Amino acid sequence: MKYIKTLLLFFVLLMSCSKEFETEKELIPEEAILSSCVDYSLADEDNLLTYWNLFVADVKCSRGGPDYGALNTIVNISFITPSAEEFASGITPDHAGYSTFYGYCNSDVVNIGVIKDYWEDYTEIQKLWLMYHEFGHDVYKYEHSSLPTDIMYPSVSRSDITMNDFIKAKEKLLKRDFEGIKYIYCPE
Image 1: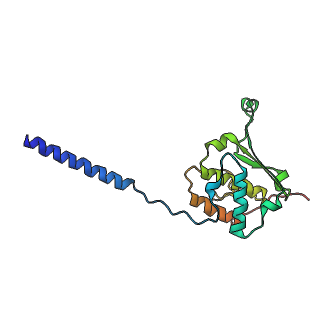
Image 2 (image 1 turned 45 degrees about the vertical axis):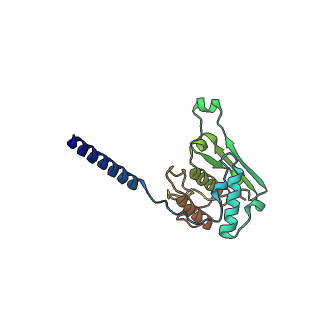
Image 3 (image 1 turned 180 degrees about the vertical axis):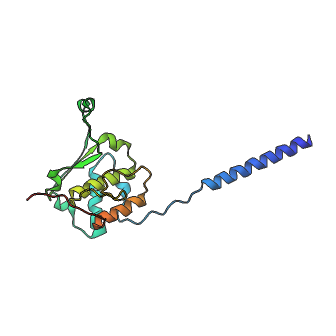
């Protein structure tokens, strides 16, 4: 009997130490979020215009302007849902969003489409990344970058990107400071 009690006590101690060790191992300190002058939590995933408003505010407070909200008098940002016929025929977009010639070659127009199916699968940070990417085309007339950590890279980053990854890439975008920057040609 004494042997069983001792064995039981040993087993309880072993389990409690094991659980304590696992708890300590799970505690990973959170990375401090880099400073930004806009509150990205204000983006409403159901209202794409909120992303435009964040971008406009971000440019004004990060770079001191210009006020793209005042300069762009026509802003068309919408969700696109491919039709059943497009899906059936295999003609579906291979990208999550797009800017058009009408937008990037007209300084007073923003014209961006976002494919709803892709959007619904993205994290909040991927959505910010996609929208700033499209604003990079439409507002700054940027072509794609060859560096995967740039917002202007042709595909949205992986789902494990952090807010700090986004803020760093966004700062490079707004400062027009990334390697191999090229601009979309717009005929006069």
